[in-house]
Amino acid sequence: MGDKSAIEWTDATWNPVTGCSKVSPGCKNCYAERLATRLHVMGNPRYQNGFEVTLHEDQLTLPLRWKQPKKIFVNSMSDLFHEEVPDNFIVRAFEVMAEADWHLFQILTKRADRLAKLASKLPWPRNVWQGVSIESADYTWRITSLQKVPATVRFLSVEPLLGPIPKLPLKGISWVIVGGESGPHFRAVEPTWVRQIRDQCIQSKVPFFFKQWGGVTPKAGGRTIDRRVWDEMPDFNLSRRYTLSLAR
Image 1 (cartoon, helix red, strand yellow):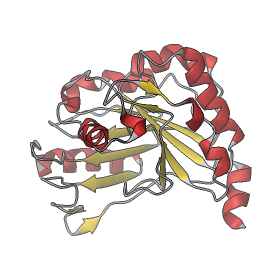
Image 2 (cartoon, helix red, strand yellow):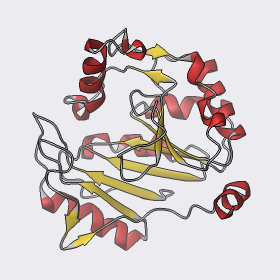
Image 3 (cartoon, helix red, strand yellow):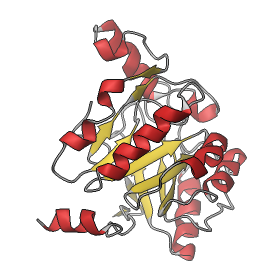
């Protein structure tokens, strides 16, 4: 369950839920679905249901057992706000994140409407960053839902980027990640689409992180734009205990 991660913008993954279902074009070639299918065939007990939504009660408290501070990507193999995940399970996950305040938690969802509806029922400690995934201009409405959430850091994962987004709503957004698609059936990203978003971030003074160009493998195209690696991130010093833990 991922105390180390190859994802460039995080340190570890935590999956109290596995499995998901497709809601928009960005889901077409889902990496998590491919991996879950492989793990199911290999007999991994966490994936005995394949890619069906499955709750793992025994994993809820896992971050409390990680004593070294980490940036933790929540549900890399699912969506915490999936409609099949009960409200009380989401609340319990947030309570664990609040208790494990020496970590920094990064949550992404495509279910931005459910996120906005549940936001008032959830604790929002300063070590929880909330983001939404969008893939094209047709799904920037998810950002409007995110802007209603009282998270200290609201961020966007524009991956896989499938088309130009000439006007990215950045009010109240603290970070933007962009990436091209990877996998055997990847849809190529156009450099002009990436530069367009980068330039909007520069103009709005929003940290910009370019994860990958994509290709058959995630590393195939590298991650350099115009001879530079863009790996900007928000300030981590958002919770006193997290800052003190890093200093030890």
